[in-house]
Length: 375
Image (cartoon, rainbow, N blue to C red):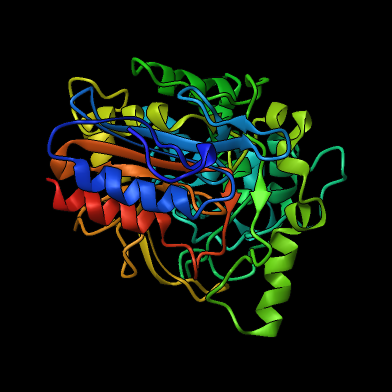
């Protein structure tokens, strides 16, 4: 299958009969790309769409291959949410965090629940004081700071995306209830699905290199200058060191908010498996609990409409997860989108190394719209 006049715009892969509209949409996406893209869709363990193309490293001309992995950014959070759901028998969302992590009661947080932490309503969107450069990618070190910290609003009263602190707090909870390295808990949860793997705290093979669109911006819904300063504090590490996600230090950190690497086929297989009780590494009752609405509204910092389960993003008013009424997963900075349409028993993943601003990036949305027409 080919499309476009240049090798960099050649579409590789396959689609099942009846899914040519997805192939056409993918060719259009790839034709407008300056780096690499991949889109995979899996149902019942069988791939319906496996497409990739473009460049994994535009600087060297290395092409994106079927097994190329890339930084998931916050797509990692969806896998972290699944890891937490997999141990739901030991991690009650209605229990106070201090039951499992006594130090977290510092700063007046003795009544904060696990559910408030996992649904982004706890009011700890950044660490204060900020960790040292040597510790900023260390979830456990950041968690120790957060345990002492006072929330900036009454937990449970507002929802706002916690871009880095979510992972640090989830990591500490996983460590406390399992006695294991939290990165291993998440890796093992993913690995229970045949064909699925995430590189988390380890060196990946030849990862795609990140390319930023010249107009790339964060928090594109936000216009308030005071809250913009909060956002810059929340994302300071990546704003000040834009090349950090390409570094071995970032990959080896395995930070549960955003340092996972995987391929689109692996992500689609994992989310598809979650939809089927017989193949899911997460018990059906725990997944249902994790994917019901725990918080929703306009982000108190970013002004973006959002809706969360226990760590999973859910179908929202702006159609992040396509036309399906019921969906869950997690998006990633720059355009990645990974998730499931459970009523269809279907998992999907759009993965790219070309970061674009959310308000101008319609790549994943176009692919999900095309997919919906084929079902």
